[in-house]
Amino acid sequence: MQSNKISLKQFIQYFKIAVTGKEQEFTTGSIRRAVFMLSIPMILEMLMESIFAIVDIMYVSQVSVNAVATIGLTESVITLVYAIAIGLSMAATAIVARRVGETDIKGASNAAVQVIFLGVFVAAIISAIGIVYPKEILSIMGAEPDLIAEGYGYTQVLLGGNVTIMLLFLINAIFRGAGDASVAMWTLILSNGLNIILDPMFIFGFGPIPAFGVEGAAIATTIGRGTAVLFQLAILFYGYSKIKIGVKDLVLRVGVMLNLVKVSLGGIGQFLIGTSSWVFLMRIMSEFGSEVLAGYTIAIRVMMFTLMPAWGMSNAAATLVGQNLGAKKPERAEQSVWKTGKYSAIFMGLVSIIYLVFAPQIIELFTVTPNVVKYGSLCLRVIAAGYIFYGYGMVVINAFNGAGDTKTPTYINFVCFWLLQLPFAYVMAIMLNFGPVGVFWAITLAEILIAVVAIIWFKKGHWKTVEV
Image (cartoon, rainbow, N blue to C red; front, side, top):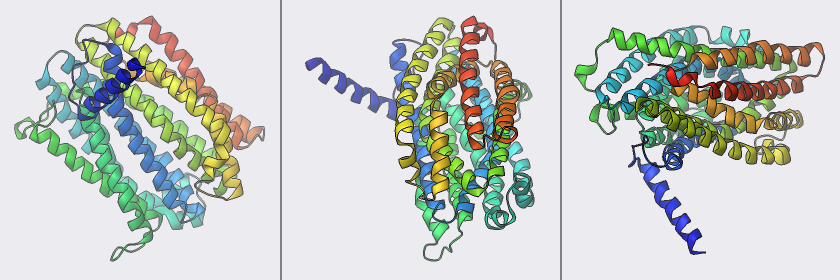
């Protein structure tokens, strides 16, 4: 009995240390402790992101079915922005973690500056396209005219302000690579806390603020993320994290930039493959009407609530791999991945049981429209069938990225998404008339295959020899 009390006391003590970021040494000592110290703030960070996604869709679902469908279509396009941001952020985490493991803090800071420069440049191009062509983007995605008329403002604002998405991703990746996971966590708490407060004010109106409808959700999100980016920059410039940037550091360093681009290309390709597959799946789903599309969108938002903690654990694995490789400890890096993968799989397995049993009740928290509930709950149940594989595979894939081996996951994604998932979804849903369930099973089978192939390839150990 005494032992349990001590364990609980230790857990609370470790939890406090993790969220305050007081421990930043992850290349020595207990691997389990290192996984815990990095995972807790990363899980809380991702949970905050997914809580916002849930709250956002709850507000928007009160506007109209078209409003929910607009978010689904726009987010399938905005994931292309995420692809670039995540690809660059993987390179940032890998390079910063490697430099920190080598105790080269100046090199880590130089890499951070180049990451920010690249992010601003790419975001400017995407903003121009989003501001000028929002209606055309929704039309290409298969949106009906009334949906375009109601929702194009959401698309315009979200894509136009994508620099906030880009920099939020990239600067948090810098913090994670340095082991400052708690800083990244507090940044997202600020961003999404503001989003949750501002969402109803801009969607439904508040005092002098008019009711913007679904467009208000995009305005609130952009303001929340923009404020968080200013907070991140203040931390970097005023030296509250391990990585510090001064005005004198704001110069273009061609060598560092080229190395960053080289490492990020695999990551960008990897996520472009995944997100373009997502876009095509959304396009197939749009063939079945707004109610089916709305059910699918709600289900995906709900799933993000549980995928984000697993993503947080996978980010922890990436940092541990990068820092331990930098410290010339490849075996410790590998052990960190297997331990983190096990924890992630256990968590996802528990969640899958909840989804299988309570899927309709979960979807009914957002809407009572029969068809939306029917297809939303069906989506949850089918995809939950592969959740354990997803949890383990996510950690192993991100471990490759943490090592700077972004090419291997790119090849795996290409085979599993483009050569398996998309053809299977189209044939099952459209040609064989299985409807939306054909798309749901395509997602599940692809994720299972990704996990199996990634584990087999990771065991070969080639990632241990990658230089960044």
